[in-house]
Length: 121
Image (cartoon, rainbow, N blue to C red):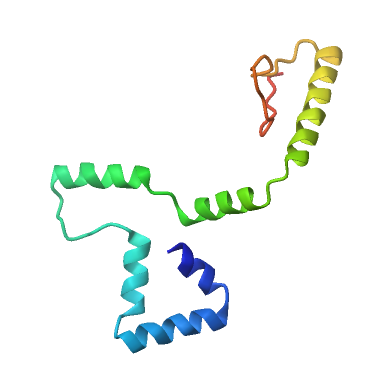
């Protein structure tokens, strides 16, 4: 499915996929629908199947999540992280100096990357 999303961004590649499915004799719409659903639907409503389905759903990443992870990993720059950590440490020091009643959760953590900078005022 990830490759389908990549190919769909290029009209030429998408056209190639459509023609390939037609040539092979497969129904592209059924394939895409089944891929998006990701799980069989002909097993009924048995409790065992529902438990299994919930387990599979918990393990399955969404395409959007996978694209985000791919983008983050392919564009990772350690210098940006270092700059963010330095900037947040400076802000935390300023808050501790100028507003000592403000609480910064996680400020005593052994390692902090500052993806979030929560405060309690």
